[in-house]
Length: 173
Image (cartoon, rainbow, N blue to C red; front, side, top):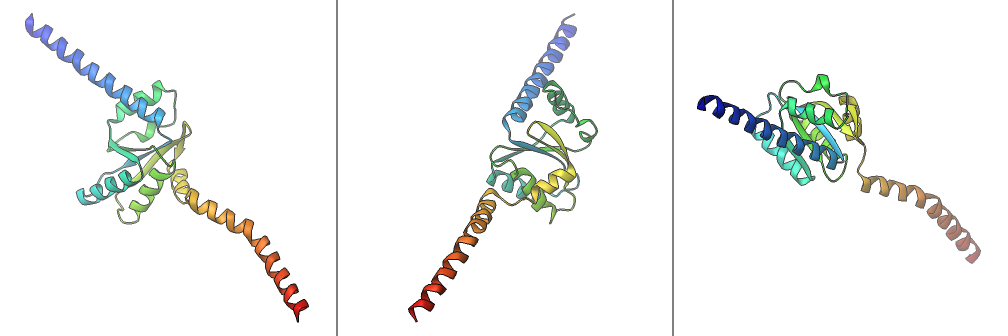
């Protein structure tokens, strides 16, 4: 009788640990700006270490999580679309700063690590497929976009200033 009680206590403890892990995953999903799910099968230890370092630089948390626990967390949050993607070796990158950071780090890593594959992602609480994740990675950073906008806004003004300068020079002659 004591063995059965001990077994039940271990099962109960394991379920509590899984429930705690699911809550942690739910919290990460709710608090991140975006999430990218990747297949890391075949990636070398050195490449994985470099990838993790790049994620840390960009304020992205990269974790290998159990597919079933991620699926349960997503279902409990009411987020659909991930069913076929949570199979095989899966790692999740949670972008906590720039919402495009995780996608950009993965896209840069794919240039040198062919084994790394994007499965799908999450942005603004909605599922996005691998193609969309890769397209998002090609968007320039906020700073670059602001610089481009500033250049566009300054172009007509600088053209006008040059024209006025030439008119003033001609009148001075």
